[in-house]
Image 1 (cartoon, rainbow, N blue to C red):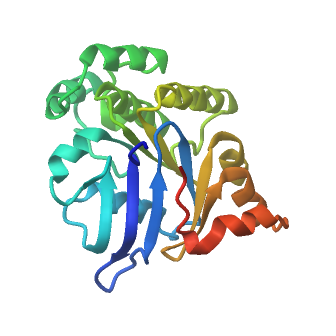
Image 2: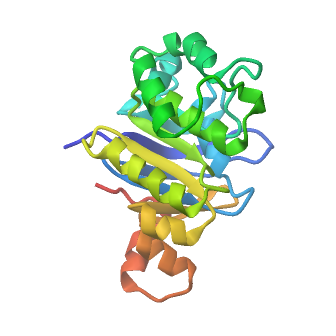
Length: 242
């Protein structure tokens, strides 16, 4: 049986500030997963628990079966993040950023980076801090693809995308996972986007995962449609998708 790309096992944050509460789910290779929730629901916090080596929580977060706490720096080789919180050198061009930061990843390919930037129609000679948010996301996606991760984390990246590029973007996501070696986890508050373009989805509310299941059923439940299969998906958000 395949090992989950990402798993959360009863993850609860420590401290007084906003945190996740008893989150459990699994992501299997070869699928696009979505997290739905209003601003402040915990979507970005969930990503931070993965990316921040000093995140304080109980429970376990594993990438390809390995607890990320045990060897965080090495496991980050397997994760590609696209987010407004992602840090790059603002005064450097995209190409310079790639040349500086790429060597920190075991499988980084400058050739792949340049090819994806061309496909996305973004000049690698652009200075990062002078780019629009959409251009920054495209650069970050090219950078992530270039180091060949098994897990893509995409935080509200479709905001402001025009309809044509949105279709192209999800086509690209499907290409990334077609060999069933990787999976994508993206956040959004756009229900129609989640229903059409993701395979499975979870709903976060006030730091809790209140449902996790097949995307059309999850969205139907949020729209108030009655469906007995939707009830089977809930079980307090602890559904394992195989």
